[in-house]
Amino acid sequence: MAETATPAETAHVDRVRGARRSPAEHLAEAFTSGSVPGTVTLTEIPYQTMVGVRVHPASDAGSRVASVTGGLPATCGAVTGSAVSGKDSVNTLWLGPTEFMVVAPEEAHDSLGGSLVSDLTTALGNDAGQVVDLSANRTTFELSGSHARAVLEKTCALDLHPRVFKAGTAVSTELAHIPVMLWKTSDESYRIFPRASFADFLGRWLLDAMREYASPEVP
Amino acid sequence: MLLISCPNCGPRDETEFHYGGQAHVAYPESPNDLTDREWAEYLFYRENTKGTFAERWVHSTGCRQWFNMLRDTVSYEIHSIYGMGQPRPDIKVPGQRSEPDKPGEFTQTGEFGQTEPGLAPGAPTTGVPISGATAPTSSEGV
Image (cartoon, rainbow over the protein chains, first blue to last red):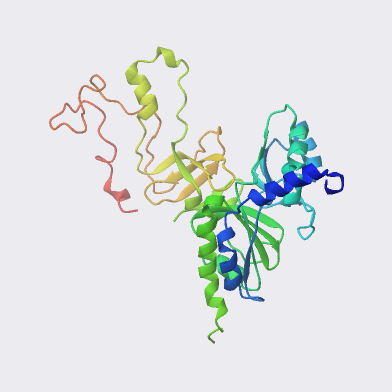
């Protein structure tokens, strides 16, 4: 943790941070200029800690893992963990009956002084299952604003109407024909997790889909 | 586009799924005792049913779980979705000719690889007639 870090550890963490390149880093400027504040905005939340967990939730290992993550979601769409707004929020997304994705801020990663991955590995122990550090597998886009749903509805086949797709739901689906996790974090905010190699494509696709909302609405 | 109801995730577009071929093809009890022909039939010979067909699907973009589906290969209507390992549900579809699609029903004479009965003109037609060739025309264009 930061308060106990020696100068050498701090230097190491700085080196790690300096060496990283996020998958959509080159689009940051385009995201800023393409966003329409109050209507729809797109940002990348880079370097989030993500851990893929495969464990049977009803097993002993499952309950030990659940105690680290703050519960394991039981059904498709369910998300467990603390509120998303918090800086230290650790959330678990349902990927399958025995497969989960733990999403946490970058500080939770072991290379930056956190202990999430090692905690989960310890919790699983030698039981059946796996804990894999997938932090570099996906990046995170945050699409928010009153027209965020309209942007997503251009490509998403799911019913995104709030009566069906409620805040606090995360599903694995397709956007623009690429597989993503889509997490509705609040009424007008979505987090999209594309794999790193799709980040450029999806970022540009979303920018294009957002462009019409920069112009005044034609009555 | 099919709308397939995944047992875990609910209705999703067909593009999220992958097809896994004919369901209920049992692994041979003693594979070592099989002749090359029998082994090849287990591996490669599948029904080409016109009508209700039991097949495997996987929700590859979603929960990545396999399941079985009873689907009409003519109308694409999905009659039933059931779990892996469960027996094929006995569903009678009105107006559908009941054609068995059990594996192993397909028979063919001659040594394997020697002749190609379906391709060679004038090949001996001692096998079972190809399904559909003698089918009643009432089911066409359903």
